[in-house]
Length: 527
Ligand code: GDP
Image (cartoon, rainbow, N blue to C red):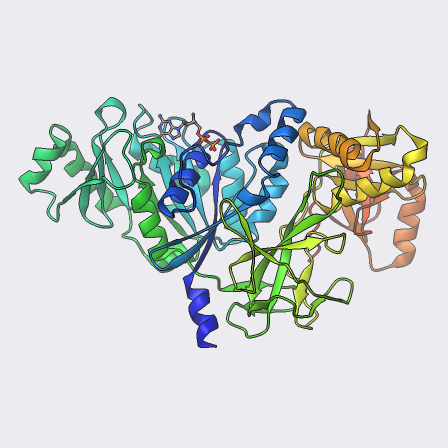
């Protein structure tokens, strides 16, 4: 038990959230260099190219081993075992990002000081708030003439609806950027463009009125004093409990490309970021230190090698110790599950492991057993709660172009939907297949993967549906009546749940009004 407790306390499992271009890839790389998980700059591939064509995207994914090796990056820092989970940069894959956020205990939010709070940051921050995930904020690109720091603080507070505590404060900005004053460690860290890992130029300054500050910050010293006085009046001192409950976000400033402010950030993260604690299931709250193992699948990744249709299921361990070759229960099917080659992820390679602990992510070789959201336990029948699917707004009818390949076509669609690439709806009577997506890139990926992995070809036809909701009713007679009156608009999702499709919001609302007994949901969370 002692061993389990100490392993849990060491774990720090987090993801970086940001709007594309804010600097997520750059920071990831710097963090991994610190952790010695990679050895050269350029090893972490940016997701920015995802905006090109799909085949570029697929080719790129293939080249880097379909991002499996960079999906989870593990490294050690100051006694903690850090697991950094990668999230896709492109908005079309945002559901993938939401699911990854179910598997982390905290997040790092990166904001571009020139652009301020952007649209993706807003949405991702909202998801974190929903789950009360603690957030540390890093304001990047201080080497550029960005927004005024006080203005940025206001923007974060009002737009993201979270209180802040500055942990550092910039001295100048853009060309006049001199460094940051660390309020957390009470010292001045001088900016050195293109800094390396080892050469932080640090001046310990306990007293802001010491002439040391004038000597190093020059004309910026007076402004810094004034601003820090203001900060001390306006913002609360750092309170770890408030951070852990998601009420405040500590804020750092820096310039990731210049490797500036990243070490302070990492040092602080290992100090304050939470170890794994609890996870909610539909039945009860599971604590990390329970001696029985439990975990859930939050991501499934296909091998793009067309010869093998096997997949990797990413399992987040929530409690107890996972052991290789031990028999577990796959709760959804009720069947036993055992694996002889679970993999742990390091930045550049995958290793077979014997044990894993809460907070760890392991890869399970999968030949079709798992769906996203599946729970594994030592026998208890529980189901971990995830982030629900959101009713999509773009629908396409998907047509099989080769009747000889209908088996491959159906299997491909179902498996890709299980992986979460798209939402798949099957019309109840005609069995027509509809895809629901957030963005067009998802459709391109489906087409490409159906062709390359399943040898099936398809076409997408426009659909008149633009909105949908899940429907439920205790009274079977009522639901049967609903279905028979609107049979052409009823479909089932991959889990067999009933979905009502409509051509516009007004139609949807009008129909629902006719059936006040029917409950409807715009997310797949039916609680
Ligand atoms: P991502 O899309 O969030 O992963 O962003 P990247 O890490 O790929 O960075 C986007 C662009 O911003 C790249 O051209 C980086 O070189 C640049 N960048 C990152 N950090 C900084 C910084 O501190 N200062 C400046 N001036 N540019 C930066």
